[in-house]
Each structure stands twice: as C-alpha cells, then as structure tokens.
Image (cartoon, rainbow, N blue to C red; front, side, top):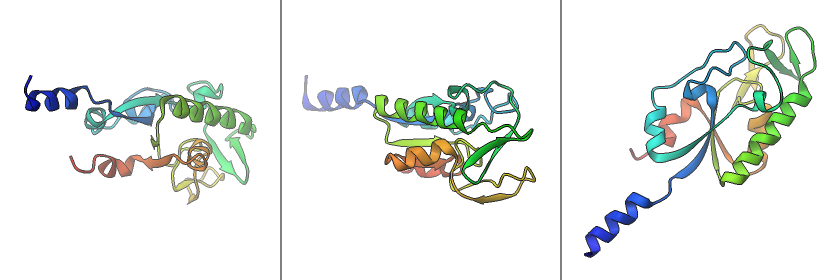
Length: 161
C-alpha cells in the first residue's frame, strides 16, 4: 500500500469528536410540550461529530409532556408551583456522567431551557421574560470544563466546513 492510500485509510477510520446534544434538537419529542426543535444543520454536525443525544429533564425523572418550569433564584419551579429542583439536578448529574463516559468536551444544548439554556433562561415569572444565566445542566457542564453551545452557535461548531 502506498503512502497516499495509508493516509486516506487513516482519515477514514479517524474517530470523530463526541458532542453532547439536546435530544430535542435532533427531532426527538422530549420537550416539556412533547414536541421537538429539530434543526436542519444536525446532519452536517453528524458528519463532523459523534452526536450523543441527552435530555436532562427525562434523566431527572420528569415525564413528557410535563408542566413548563423556570428557574427562580436557586430553585426550579413548575408553572403550578411544584419545586422540581431535585429532578433538574439529578438530570444534570446524569448528563455530566454521560459526557465523562464518552469523553465529550463540547455540548450543544437547547437555548432558554431551564436545563439546557446557555447564556439566558426564563426568569421564573412565566411571562416569557429572559434573564442572563444558564440552565441547571448547562451550568454543571460548564463547571466541569465542558464548552457549552446553544443552537444559535451551530455555525461555530461547524467552523471550517
């Protein structure tokens, strides 16, 4: 085998970088309303990364569909007033564990979600008002040194393509 064929074979077998991704962005109906937010660009991401779908809210034991929740102070409350902080924390921990097992150093998460929001989340008043901050899982992943991106950052993740 000549050197050109060897290098081509190496490139074909090179392992792709793992990327944690919110399952709803892949078209999985796991959002609070049972819907998804599938994105066209996901197939392009799959060419560059090994996509690892996650849903911290489901991992935390919450059903789909579920009552919408927002972060208020240090707690996560559902619209009907139920404190679901423990479920969000449990789901965040499971998501981090998956990132650790797979060696993922990046995560692409659903913006504005109380679990996955990156940079801004709803303010806990259920009025559609955003405030600066991260969702519970996004914050935990960041603290663990994982780079967290929202769906508006997909062009950055595809950079160079």
